[in-house]
Length: 181
Image 1 (tube, rainbow, N blue to C red):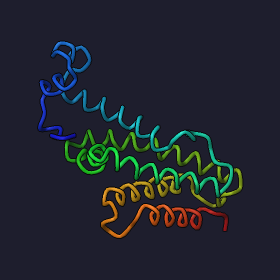
Image 2 (image 1 turned 120 degrees about the horizontal axis):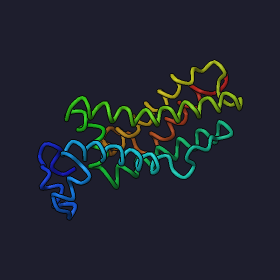
Image 3 (image 1 turned 45 degrees about the vertical axis):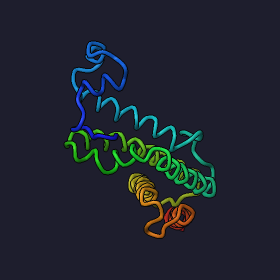
Image 4 (image 1 turned 30 degrees about the vertical axis):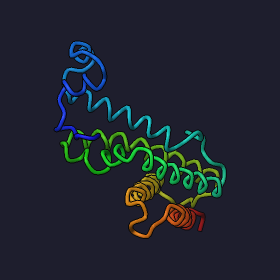
């Protein structure tokens, strides 16, 4: 995170991990292999941290749905406050490494989108979301709202958007856009 992918070598990684080169090569064939493993691991950890203890349990009302997304936005702000290098890497630096990294990040991010699609489908079936919603488009919108909140968190209010304002406006938008007509 501090020196960038191109600025480090296998020696640096092995030293930082406190292992020998031999041990490193027991698990990874090159620097690229560890990058892929780190990306996958970090996305798994981010998912657990950002989505929180609710996990895959679908909300049972529009209020619960909106409250959940409010908590996710708060967790995104907390993530930026505690792990700014990690967030900056995934949002801004990873795509500059090469297309494979970008594709791997996008593949991992789609998991969030798929979970959102499932939540939308559940909300439609439960009757608290608009029956005419396309779950895939609505899921992409939810993901976009979260990415937008993450970018606002990275700007740390420099654009006049406080955490409370971002959360409240995002929830208001979702409530208006997704509720039955």
